[in-house]
Image (cartoon, rainbow, N blue to C red; front, side):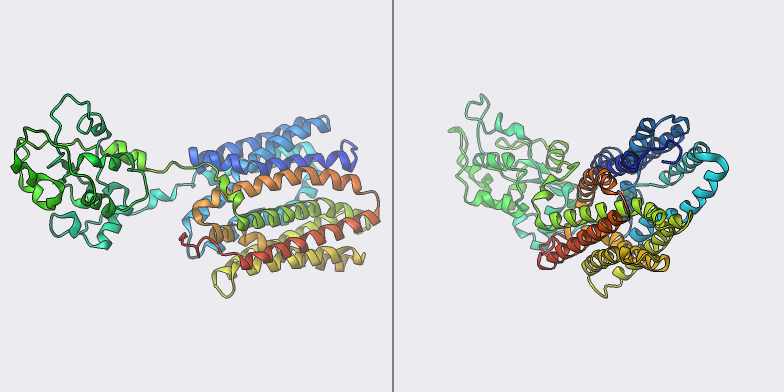
Length: 510
């Protein structure tokens, strides 16, 4: 505004574009993190943000800054920030709240230091030199990204070999069957070519019961070769191999299946090889006339049975619980962003002093830092539900924001900023943890990414609208009151989550 002599309505588009891309890049960051790695995405984002800030040094007009700061810095920050939340959440369980609070407190800490520091640097180097220095600082994102090892890299492999007594699968106890069924590498699989070769009516080869069929179990059965009789009518075992049924159900099906088809030339003594005789089938040698081996196809079926990773789980939009979190978070993003943008201008209109606007921002950021770390740490103590911190934080910060313009005194405004900072930091610090608790850790990337995207859309629209509304001291008062009421509404809406069962209660363990 000072260098290019632009109006607030014009300059508002710079933070608006920046915040929009910062938030709306969340789903893109989630997709790239799943496809590649947290480290790769963070490196790309840090490079974009640093490049955009350095290129701002050569700006000659506002339009140029729209591209460098609004687009490049916003997109770079949007790519590099979400992986930080995801990887911290995956590493910590017991102290997850505190870890997330410390993780996201970096922005608050920077907001404490940067406003007064930037004022000094601007007086010495001007805005061009300041942009170059900030770009160099942002490049340090590379250093942090190099430590983003996937949590799987630090897993310890533990071999579990369950002892199975007897050869008959019907003798497995329920616990053993359940453990085998839950392990991907312990399925007994049959090659799908059986449909065209062994079990086909049009096959030119000798067609008889698939007795003494040799199957190879996997690691949990200690790589022993077992012979299990599979009747012709059981082709549905192959076709329905991807259905969520237990192993015991699959091998009990033959007892109700139709008898196997037999060739007229088959000896009647071969009846002992039918499925009705269970583990006695293993007594026949593999070279017996009526027996043949079925090829084990571990790789093909384990690949088919493995569920494909979803980049973004859009089914969350059908979940009322997620919609409440998303809407309340979006309302908070609108209020917090616009409050931070207009606070220095409000201080200038109130004639508080040239540096008092930066001081108010530092007060908000300092208490925001306390709220993020303190609220997150308290949420780990289980003294009250995490949802309580979220609801109270939204409600009280809204009341503080509504009360701020009531008195034009610097002390009173500073106190309101402090209260707003503490409670806004409290609900910000527990947001990711609350999503994990309510929706499940496996859905954090999708839920967090979608929420950021919605926040970005609103942050693109709201700053220009607020800039157009601002015309005098009375307009600032009205805007603060409206933003405060919106936060109170968001807190009231969040209270409805008390009556909604979370996914953990429904059986999805976190």
